[in-house]
Amino acid sequence: MFLILDNNDDKEKFCFLYKKINASIYKRVYSILKNEHDTEDALQETWVKVMKNFHKIKDQSYEKEIGFIWMVAKNTAIDIYNKRKRTVDIDDIDSMLSERTESVENNVISKIETDKMLSAVKNINEKYKAPLMLKLLYGFTNKEIAEILNITETNVSTRISRAKESVRKIILKRDEKDE
Image (cartoon, rainbow, N blue to C red; front, side, top):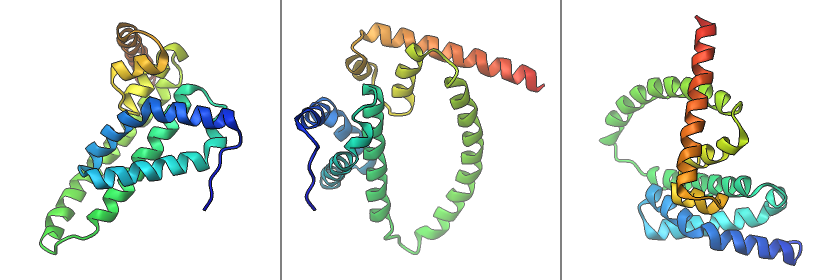
C-alpha cells in the first residue's frame, strides 16, 4: 500500500504533530501494553492510520487533532492487548467470569455517571473545556496540556479547576431539578 499526504503543508503538519506528541503517546501506549515490541508496533500502526485519515483532521483545531491521534493510539494499543490476551489458560476462566460479573455492574454505574458528566462538560466555556478534556479523556499531564495549548501549567491547573467547578454546579442544578 502506498500512502502519501496531499501536499507539503500536510507533510509538514503531520511531521510537526509526530514530533510534538510521539514521545507522550509512546509512554501511554507502553502503560497499556507493558511491552516495548508491542508498543512500537502500536505506534507504527497508529501513525499509518493517522496518515490514512489525515484529510479528516487536518483542518481541525490542534486539540482535536491531538485528541484524534491519542484515540487512535489508545484503540490500537487495546486491540493489540486484546489479541495478545486471547490465549487464556483454562484455569483462568472461572476467575475471569466472576471478575466480569462485578465489572459489568460497575461499568453500568460508571457509564451513567460518565454520560451525566460529559453532558455537563458540553455546556461549559470552551476556554475551560479544552484542558479538562485533554486531562480526563486523553490522560495528558498538566505540563503536556500547557505545551499543547501554549499556556502556563498554572493556567492549566486554574482552568481545569474552574472547569470542574462549572461541571459540578451544572450537575447539582440538574440533580435538584430531577428530585
